[in-house]
Image 1 (cartoon, rainbow, N blue to C red):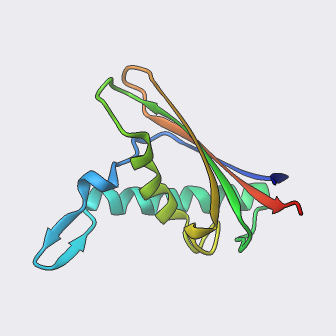
Image 2: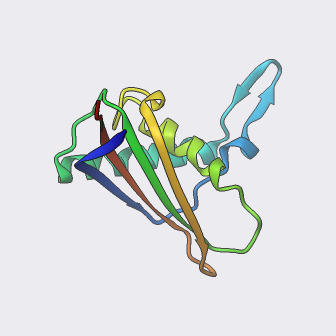
Length: 129
């Protein structure tokens, strides 16, 4: 059984999350990230570091639960799971050692015309025996 210890990091963003899966490009035999994805990952790492400092969170090597609530600014059909790629990679070696520590994913989406935002919560998980 999994339960959360109560230590939660909350990150609130006001940008559109790039759909990394749809943006990766092939150059020769190399796959690379476009500038849009790199810029978002850099911005989210900065935002996360500020939230960690403010909320007293230290990088963890423990299992985590990641919850994501996304507001899309248009009604274009989007796959919610594609939002996780940029977010999980941005938090590697900052919030947690590696995104393989994520044991629980929870997500929701809604549409508000012209508004792009997200709320991300990361919670430490203990495994009860």
